[in-house]
Structure formats: structure tokens, C-alpha cells
Image (cartoon, rainbow, N blue to C red; front, side):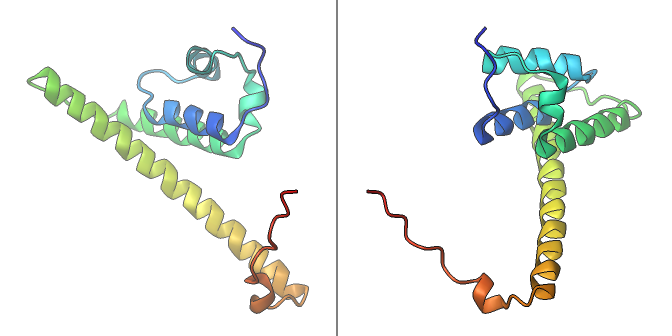
Length: 136
């Protein structure tokens, strides 16, 4: 196990992917163990919880899993069919999480647009291209 470094965007994406495919009981401790197995570093609950994408994905998956416990399990007749059902379930969880992230980003955009308008910033100014990067 290596010393835990700050989580990069790539690490956060991997953790969110772990949550998308999660089945069974979900707790922060179990997630920490799964993250350690995949990223070879141990993070605290606080370190994971402070990232909104991880926090939102955790809460969304927890709700989905509790709702799934009320439904009867789908049984497949072949291992291939079972793998397909598991993939469908993981992809449905991913779609649900991405839709929630998109809604959160749309709300943030609306807030930024309002605040920019209140400061007198016009759309043309906000849409101006970024300056070129001087790499010397």
C-alpha cells in the first residue's frame, strides 16, 4: 500500500465507477476497502466525502440499493445472461449518476449566469476565447 496522495480527477472517476458497479451492502468503510484494492492507497471517509462527485455518487447508489432490496432479484438462466444483467444494472446506475451530475452542473451554470449578469458581464465577454498558453 502506498501513501495516499490527493485524489486526482482520474482517481475520482475510478471511485465513482466503483460505486456505479456496487452491489450488496454499501458503507463508507466498505468503499474505503474497495478503493484501497483498486487504487492501492487508503483514504479516509472524510477525504472521499469532501469530493462532491464521490459524495453524490455514494448517496445515489445507497438509495438505489435500498430501493433494489424491495424488488425481487432477476435470475438468469445462463452465466452470460447473468453477466449481461449485471452490466445493464451497472450502466443504469451510471446513467442515473451522470444525470444527477448534469443537473448539479446546470444549477451551477444558472447560478453563475445570474451572478455574472448582476456584475454587468455580458454574454459576449463570457464567451470570449481563452488566451493562448505561452509554453516557454
